[in-house]
Amino acid sequence: MNAIRKPSCAVPECVKKFIDVQRHFFKFPKKQDRWLQWVRACGRLDLEPRGPEYAHQNCRLCHLHFENKWYKINKVRARLHPDAVPTIFFGPGFQQQDNTAPEQTTQQNEENVVKEKVD
Image 1 (cartoon, rainbow, N blue to C red):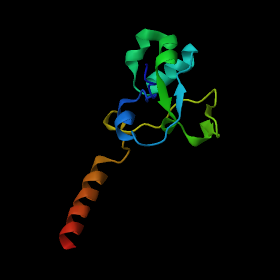
Image 2: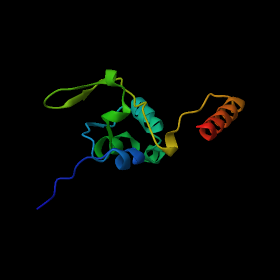
Image 3: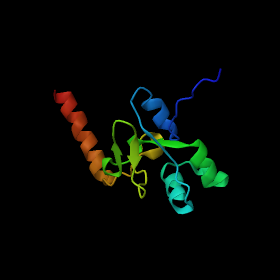
């Protein structure tokens, strides 16, 4: 008898970090331009040579990678807006650029160390 395989998110860090969270999954889009946006946004450049049809059939992204405004969840299923592009990522491969100047960061770190020593 074949076991039913639960879907998993195509973002590697997501699988590990949120394994116990109730998630809703969305197929990669079939249209080339939107598919490419998804592939590049989630860092899965290995999917580019395989094409949108492969990704649509075999890969999913969970709702945690989309802003709430892009999907609705009802009793039966989750629906994603047709123009949605994933924008929320986490983990070492997806760290946001820090716009803080290096001098500020160093000064803040020194202040924190001094504060810890005083406390």
